[in-house]
Length: 363
Image 1: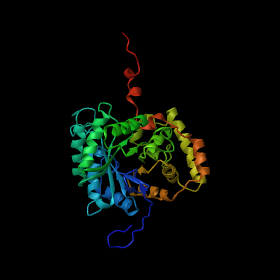
Image 2 (image 1 turned 90 degrees about the horizontal axis):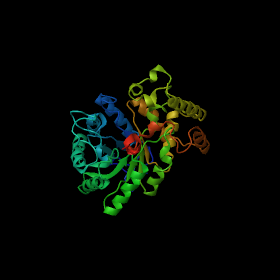
Image 3 (image 1 turned 135 degrees about the horizontal axis):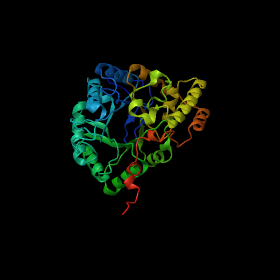
Image 4 (image 1 turned 180 degrees about the vertical axis):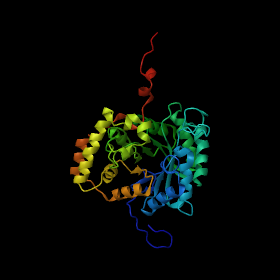
């Protein structure tokens, strides 16, 4: 490919097709959740990370309206100013609460959230404004919404695509049966369909191998996975060290408190994986990212660096190929289709979360 009049442009990464869209994306996707109040509040520092990723050949960036209450999208707009926007496949998402009076909280305006036509049509305009762009390459539904008929959601997205405000649309953290339902409704009603899915996937979180990934392959969907480093568990940091303590332990003790048996099991797996990576002469980060990239159903894992150091530690994974011997050893440590800690799966169906949906009421 060529870029302007500067002569041949050498891609440092081998691009992959994003499902059936015809768009080609880098095998690593830059996640923007850590840009803003949730991670790095200094906009210039975040922009430096984005620019370094672009220079390294990453052309795929994923964010969401919800990240730092829209600040992540604002930072991306600054980073992509000056002609960089045209070179990037830009993805964002909609679903979570965006009431400025109660950002991210259960309270507030009940219609400033969810997957209704009303909210999607409203919020895509807000994202376009924050991103300073005329179009979004991939617009994703961040989570399922059992209160909204999937036909309603797909109809709104189809209209936005026809209007040119979005180029394609996908889902995020949908269970396999919801993915299949959406494909069936799209075909039956003559609507556009989800062309991508964004599930959690890492060496420690492998449940989607059993049903979701085969379903996405059957429908020819692109797969952009989040959490390839399992929220830092596969970063190579010693979780026993006081330096590894973070706000996650305070706010999500079920997933990070090492005094809990489930997290002790996860720590044992991490130790074994760290030894395997060291024996193979690579970092645990590179092994973890290469593992995800080598699954035939996966288009690209999303990396979420907060700093340039984080980014540099991850970029080299595109040059790593895991041997059959290493992959077999990984399967011995964490069997295929198994999530070491169930709370890492990213989505709990209402039928499991709410007792009244699985218990007959007493007279």
